[in-house]
Amino acid sequence: MEVMLWNDKRERDMYENFAELYAIIKTTEKLEKAYVRDLVSSGDYETECLKLITQFKNLSSFLRDVVPSVESFAETYKMDCPAALNRLIVSGVPATVEHRTASMSSSSSGSSAAVVAECVQHFITAMDSLKLNMVAVDQVYPLLSDLSGSLAKLGGGIVPPDFEGRVKVKDWILRLSKMGAADELTEQQSRQLHFDLESSYTAFMAALPNAGS
Image (cartoon, rainbow, N blue to C red; front, side, top):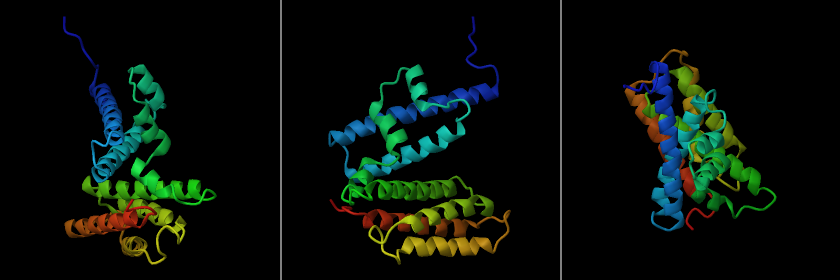
């Protein structure tokens, strides 16, 4: 007797998304353990962890109606992944980023770490969106606006006032504001914007306290 795993395409897509969420959580758990055991370099860990966090945030946001609680999802599917749930839900940034903000004064470390995490998320989301060919002005502009707002919250003690990322993002926002909402970036513009974001992100991470430790 043939057993149907789903009744229609919508239900099939839902279960495929469940499988993707499951895989992200499991992979993050393995990555966290590998980092703790010094089996992966800080650089490789940070790169992969940022990818997983961004994928998790995008997917969990998309599944919000059917998966209102990721913790309950993990419990339902008997996932023993405490490190992954902490990294993906509680922290929201790689351990390396947390370590860089640890030297900030106790009075401001909490808020500073939150702003840093916010900036990291907006950088990654904007770059990933361009990779997914989301190049319409009304798609790109809100992402850059959110990133610019987060960068504006950073104090001078974290990144310099003339930080190149702030300047480049503002320049792109000004350029997009002169275009129509339905206009799209050309391939050359999209590649240049991605390059500017990537170089700004690299400079941002390097400027964080204890970046070299």
